[in-house]
Image 1 (cartoon, rainbow, N blue to C red):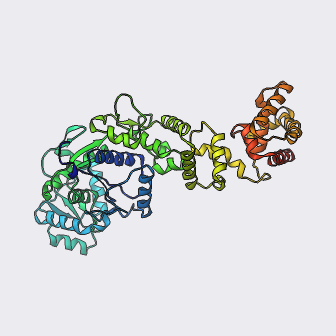
Image 2 (cartoon, rainbow, N blue to C red):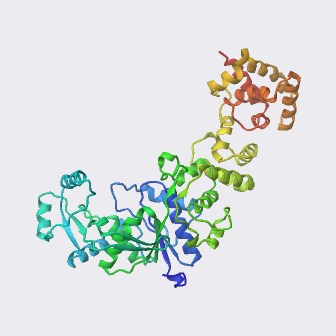
Length: 491
């Protein structure tokens, strides 16, 4: 279908398997499909491919929906919203798959097979010994229905395999051009499992046809599946949707992005304190460029700028440092209400004492941490405020380096500072700053020699917002109480 085709009939889908939270690669696939649908006035369908019961996680469906909505993506048909082509969970569409299998069997395009796992493993061993890849050998003659019944009675696993045509297959790809796959790389594959459930291949093809999908836009890891799907469509008399396979997402070392690289799920970035508008902007740039070196875009701007010609063929690289820089800049430019809402969302995903803070306190913390990278940084720097003054846990390395070093020079500084802080009437940041700088000048030391002992005494570590804000946020009574507790805890 060309871009001039009836836009109202243009339908794309995102079809995740509910095994956990939404992966970054899946989020990109969903986003690109959404952008195409919105750009062309078409329909974006969310379909849950939950036929693999061994990996199914029921609560993952809600997690995927929540992750998509957090990113700002909504679907026109699918779970929670319905539509004319439902149900949108494959586990509820078994009748369609059974009918397709029956048609393929009746017309001689599929057959029963009943090798045991041990027999299949023996075939693999033979192939390895011959230094060739295993290619399933079609039986001759084909098993009959009676053979299948007998095998079931014997307790053997009975599956249905599709008969791949004996020819090379060409995948017309909107991004890669025509991709030819030789017949020697293709084999008869299972479409119905021994438990009676459909495989991914069958359910995928049946549902794309039933839901009138115009374009299948998915990752390149599915490229070798597409010849199978084209062959199934031909055998079932289905029209072929267009296909386009997105480049893979690699880490900065040029290897496929995986859990070994750290967070790869959308929820993990949400829980780490990234803004959703930053995440979706960054995800859009994984393999697509709007041109003119443009990088910063809202979702509406992406819709206006998106086209498939901007999708590259080379693999995308996930640059965490760049994402961090994006988020730092976005947070610096955001207004009070946006930051407060973002911080509240972060707190809803994490167990932290900071969650008890009211809006005014959170606003003060965000201001005290200006220049922060993520909301997690604000949380980490400010948790000390919500701990009992006598419950501070001191980082041993900070104590040794800042307080005990030099015959207890840091402790001595605290002893000198305490009466000066107690005498200070205005306990806001500016008077505190003047006091500490005056103390440093009088003692002939750098400000760090004054600030760091206080920071460790008040927070338990050498990391916090500016020392002036830290002291002001705690207030006089709590500041003095923590200094006393620190001095009393000396070994």
